Every structure is written in structure tokens, then in C-alpha cells.
Image (cartoon, rainbow, N blue to C red; front, side):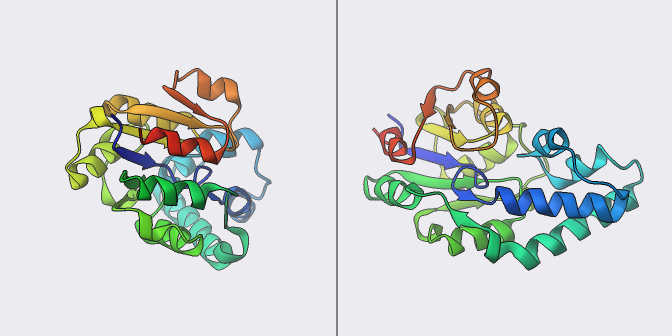
Length: 212
């Protein structure tokens, strides 16, 4: 029986894709003098900013500067560009009402993730939030999922990790949870199906069935 449902945040619960895309593009224009390529953006989704920008800059100081530029632009435009996916709030509320324990496992800063949850009305339903600054290893490594389960004192075999990227699903699988791929994120279905998720969620209302 699944009693613990862990969620990725961006692209899974909240629609922040335009904010992320524009923050990334702004950073590359400032530091590299060029526009972002779609493949660069997608390859880094679900992974920490340090990993993303290390693919583009060899100097650690330049990576730090790129992270600072990204976060400043992202913070300044957060509330105007972030919104909840239609139907997600109702599904999360029902999961909570059915007694499921809910958590967030994200590759963004803890405070930024909390801001997104509060903006979209989701914050009251989650018992734990693991951000990139809460662990030293990050998705697709199992560490952030295991950290959430440890805080909740839950067994991975009674949990499911829900996400929109292959990194989310790989992290959950490596931690020993079931996995659920959502269809409304930016990744192609083939990329997600290649990870062999245990559940395929085509619409937010189907999330409720995870607490059975």
C-alpha cells in the first residue's frame, strides 16, 4: 500500500517552466553573449544549477557568477511567471484528506521551493521539503529522496516518487520507491517511458489513485 507520495516541484506541481527558461536564457546572454539552445535547457531540468552551468563554464568563479545571475532574475520575476497546474491543488488536497503523507524533493533552493508552494496554495499539505541546499548529493542520485523518507520515518517500499523528468524517476527508483511520471511537463513521453515508471499520470486527477 502506498501511503507516502513524494513530488518533484517544477514541472510537476507548479508551472514554472517559463520562469526557468527565461532565467536560463537571461544568464547565458549575460555571461556567454548568446541565446539559450533548447537542448541545453532540457538537459539540465531537474538537476542543480551548479551542475547545469558547469557544463558551460570551466572556471568555478564563473559558475558561481552564473548561478547568482540566474537566481537574481528568477527571484525578481518569480511571482509573475509561476502558477499552479490546473487540477493539481485539488488532487493534492484529496491525497492529503485520504491520509497520505506528502513530501517535496526538488533541485531548487529550499526557500525558493517554499515560495512556489505558498504562491500556489500547496504549502499546507506537505510534511517535508528537501531542497538542493538540504543534501550534498542530488537527483538522479537517491540521496534527496532518502532524506525525505528519513525525515518522515517512512519506508521506501511504501512510497512513490512523482516527477516530470527522468532525473526525478531515476532518483526514486535508486532509493527503492515506486515511480510515477506525469505527462504535463516539458519532456517527451519517450524519455520518461524509457525509465520504466510504475505509474503513468496523464492528468492531475489521476494522482489521487496513488494513495490506495
